Image (cartoon, rainbow, N blue to C red):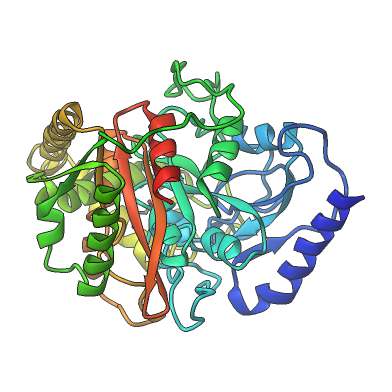
Length: 441
Ligand code: GLN
């Protein structure tokens, strides 16, 4: 039947194009088993830090290279229940730490728009797979922008739901207070279809909430751009790392929104200069704690040594890549008793100030709009200094720190490369956010 044909078609595309793109780390054998449901027979891919029983979940790390998922993540189980067909697991920066997939232990993925360029990250494999038409949708995880940034770099839609709407059960933890699973799709309607399938309160994730967000409607509510109040942070546009080409495409987009009747105001967000520093204290802190479980005892193949302590050291030394080690060192330092007050506790206070400021702006405006990324996707291997990449997370991090929903949608490309804009909405205003993004598409 037609669905079987479609599944076989996507399987063929994966087989044909993946050797070049390296979007998938594992391609599952063609299967014709799927249940009925709202996504019946629709192929998809999972970022390889999300569990699907019986598949490997490597997190693109040597330390988990042979790890077989013992159960389904809640999102995986939900998609299966609605008939979606898992095609494989996608590449990422090791443990989702990075912005390019260059930190993968299994080599970088390539951007389908230009194979010499990065697809972004950390969910770069998912973004490349959707952009190249290897799957209609994929899931990623977003801790500081890892769904939205690769979506922007690959010209697809990437959506991070409000914190707590989607269960993290079965997502390998990076920074638990920031992590959220979200869809990468070709259009906003598809993002909604996936979101309403995966969002729900889950007894296995205590941070999920019963939210009052209506997930029953088949279609997104219609929104009229007329009178919608949109805040554009002028400090975002003054950021020195912002590429002029991205800026002018963005301003053209703002112009068109205004013509359609949206009420756009340029405001001073004020907190942008603190967000990267705050994130890079909090996220590594949580990561250093979450990753302590990879000790060579509970996961992976063990390298033996003369005693217990040496054995752990050796396994972590061999198993983790440079960026993961850097984050563990940073996090262990800032959480240590001598520095906790000076760094970690202060970062928590500033996180609160950032949230308060965003909330304040979102009382006076419906959405905050900015470019998703300050630059176009760069060449693979071009940036070797991690700080350069950290600074590029400036526009996506605020939504994670404040728990807000945010979505990146593609606008007109420039010089043959995709550009994305990001809308951020009030907490739990996910449906309005998706609706406005659809209107702007
Ligand atoms: N680029 C950011 C980082 O390296 C975000 C990663 C993510 O959202 N998983 O931490």
